[in-house]
Image 1 (cartoon, rainbow, N blue to C red):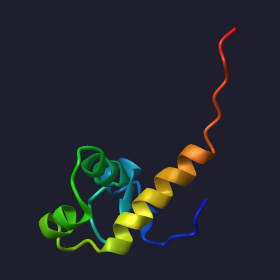
Image 2: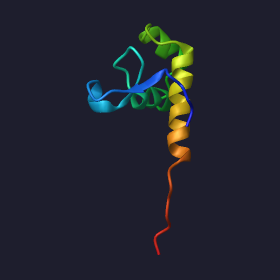
Image 3: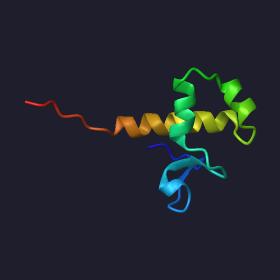
Length: 75
């Protein structure tokens, strides 16, 4: 997995979901905005505490989590 200190998980923040450091914005939420068609600019305009690097860190985190997922075919 990426060693990106922008993404943190703390049991005291959003029940331990991975969030952008210093915010209560979860990786799941940011990825969801992108999936819903929001542009990076729209996200940054709406959430000024975020940076473009934070959005990239969310994408990298999601990629890394999915790359370690194992799927087994049902027989």
